[in-house]
Each structure stands twice: as C-alpha cells, then as structure tokens.
Length: 149
Picture 1 (cartoon, rainbow, N blue to C red):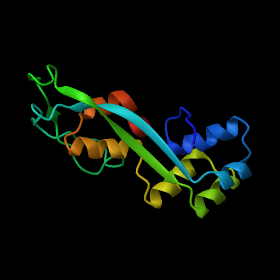
Picture 2: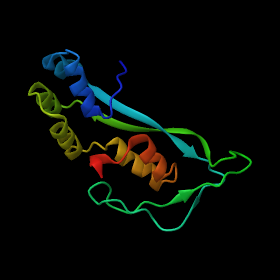
Picture 3: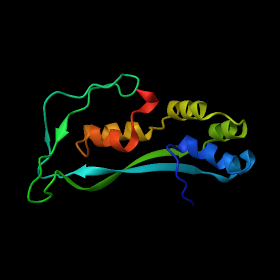
Picture 4: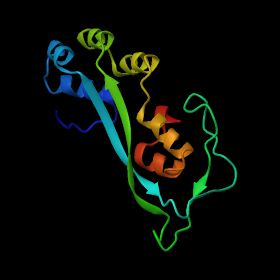
C-alpha cells in the first residue's frame, strides 16, 4: 500500500513507470489502484434543489445534473458541512496486466478500464451531484472539466 499524487488511476500506472518501476513489476505486483479527491459536502439541513438543471456535453455525462444550493443555516452557517470522498477504482485484471506490460498509453488504458466498468473520478462526482451530496461547481473546482470541455 502506498500513496502517489496523480489525477487518475491510469496516470498512476504511467507515473510509476516514469519513476523507474519496471512494467513487468507493475503488472505482477499491483492488484488495485484507487484515486481519490475530497469535495465539500452539502449541509443536509438546508440543501435544496434550485432552478434549471445543469447541461454538460453528452460525451462527459449523459443527462442533465440537478442544480443544488444551500443558503446556510444554524447547523452549517454557509451551506456545506464536512467533506465526502470521490473515488476511481481500477482493479488490475489480467487484461489490464497485459496492457501495462505492453506499455499502453494512458488514454488506451482508461478506455479499456471504462469499457470494463470503471467509473472515473468525474463520473463518480456527477453521481454525487445527482444525489445532492455536493455541487457541480465544487466538482469543477476540485477536478476540472474532463477532456478540456
């Protein structure tokens, strides 16, 4: 178990290679890679859905996101209360092991992982916005918009 600061699970694999870890060692030693970010969490006492939903490009998230706001209350004073974690989890499957051994680029690794069911940090962030845990603005502040959108 170790910590390494990168923007995604797939970037972690590339960063380890850049640090001199051999591909064969990565592919045989790793079992799971997790990326995480913390976002501010809405106060459950004063959060409310407001106005029009937020539309983002379909290639980033397929449906409009609810627009949440929290004006602040005696429990939080400013609308947020604590933080919640967003995770991106990449199990190192036999197929991913082969891609690591073949020195596959970050984009191809991520494409394969997503086709196998992995959700990115941003996708999990959109789920958190849908659930009313945080705002879209907070998601953008912490992660930025994927694909330069």
